[in-house]
Length: 219
Image (cartoon, rainbow, N blue to C red; front, side, top):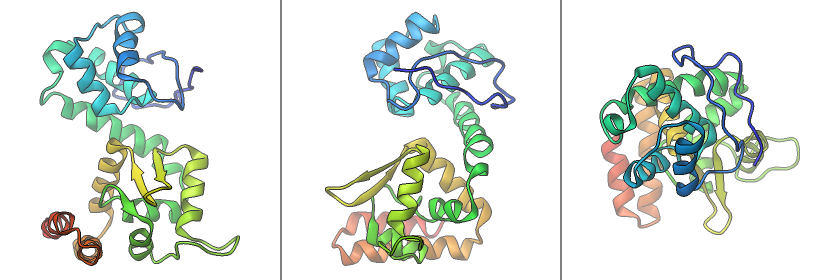
């Protein structure tokens, strides 16, 4: 593992910088426990380690932000994990993503991320329907796979399951994108995106996902 560079202008609400190793590789649950105990000096129980790992998915910066949040709030892990206090942590992650990640993307990538954030495990044909882009295109022309290649090059919390041909985003990143979509897009257009996805899953005979998206479309 190598040491990541946290941006010098990170979230203002975090009082300091947390040093940790691992920029691009995910920490395992055992490594999360060791990190908090040996590096951060804030030992976690097995249950707490599992909760932190599940919430951050082993994302190195997310773990640093978690430690920074707990240190700045004067809250012990025992009091906060799991619990409602972690809503504050989510807001700090969203601030980090807005200021240090999303704002540095061009408009095309921003729109692609926002429109494809409405469902987890998004099939590429559905991504095409949501964005108006073809799945594949000749070199130099925008496409779903081209956008994914750009995101992968930037290391932006994106996974493409080649076997299933679907897109997956880090859970915290997708939550951030969904919040931004609601804030930046007229409600009628947001509902339209959810309905497009729901109709796709009806055609794929996935009634459970279709119903969930139809319900979400009325939010």
